[in-house]
Image (cartoon, rainbow, N blue to C red; front, side, top):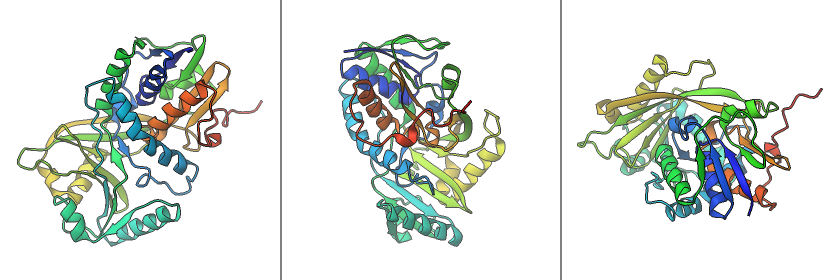
Amino acid sequence: MSTLTVVGGGLVGLATAFRLAERGHGVTLVDPSPASGATHHAGGMLAPVAEVVYRQDALFPLMLRSAELYPGLMADVAKHTALPTGYRTEGTLVVAADRADATHLAELTDYQAAHGMSAERLPLRRARQLEPGLSPQLAGAVHIPGDHQVNPRLFAAALLDALGNLGVEIIREQATRLPGGQTILANGLGATALYPGLQLRPVYGDILRLGVPEYLDPLLSRVVRGFVEDRSVYLIPRTDGTLAIGATSREDDRPTPQAGGVHDLLRDAIRLVPGVEECDFLEATTGARPGTPDDLPYLGRVSAELIISTGYFRHGILLTALAAEATLALVEGRDPGIDLSACEPNRHQELP
């Protein structure tokens, strides 16, 4: 088996290193502070249906395939670590705050169905039976049982432990040049410094973490996503008794939580789930997600010794399983089993 270097210790890099090491490849991971970038601030929703974006058809098969791969990835990681991952499969509810939001939700559900995705419209009474914490004033609800979640911080810690148990060397330094030999470049926004042909931009998102008091626990048992006056918000119940709320999206080069964003998230979350108002405020953070000009990832081989895997934008956690599996196939010279042509890493290089 070959010896490889994975540059980047976010969830994509960690899972890629895991898949390679598990197959018997010698692996070195290079990152000054693994799991401290976008992974640390991510929501962790594995939601190929709820995350559908209009006119991003090339993403849909990638998202669906990655969701299919996740159960196997989680089972394999569990063979090499006893640490928890926060993986939950209770499903997702998508709700609408008012009549206009209900129209938006109905149109989105029709769009999902037209692309072969399953989302079940629910009477509000049934939605509140599933999640009693929902407001009785909502205007619509959809159930997506196949959209799951993982806790990115816990999963990253579990992967790091598994890598140690598999003998992966972790070099906690900044990569200033491409190392020799087979390399996978998976260091998010930092990839442009090592491979300048990539066009990556930081897209910031504020995310909140609340503590659910014992008398309300569990406030929710499944992910709740919602539209509130056409604004998106999501609430993610964690296995550790906390609740994540996110996420804004902005491209203003301000890498700290914004007061307006925190206010909007809390206001909209409380409108959907009134009990949020009684939770403890633990944390507000901001992460920078690597976006490309067409919001599709860069994933593919660019030379005999270099594979690019970055630019996952809002779908980094969801696409982690696919990124790891596809990269393993590329390393081993196998067909990845899915068309990656839309992800070709050199597609945005400027011609001379």
